[in-house]
Image (cartoon, rainbow, N blue to C red; front, side):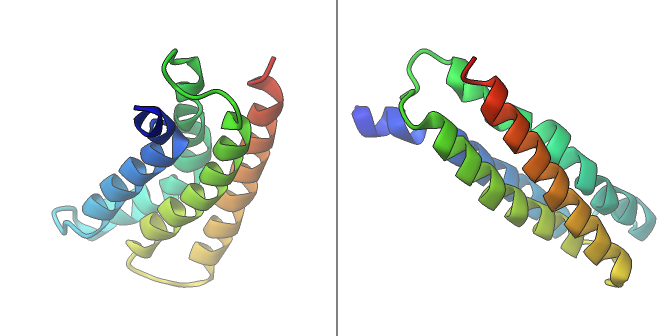
Length: 122
């Protein structure tokens, strides 16, 4: 039972986010313009929506609290990288704009994660 409680944390949420983005990136149901717009918007969706969502398990009573902030920090950086990378792979033209969007997304993820690791324990 302890291991089940340990699994309910930010890692399982990032795995869910990754599977969702992977499904939509490879589904092929969107036209190119819509897919390109959403792939660039992933630069802002990941840090400002998915990172705060992955911090919500700290408020659940059955989640293991020790080491949660460290788990959140590492899982958000690694999961944010994979989700952002998979979302930006769906863009039709892989040029320098995609690399810039990736670097901006990673910097925003790092800023939001750093801010949340200071605010969450309070």
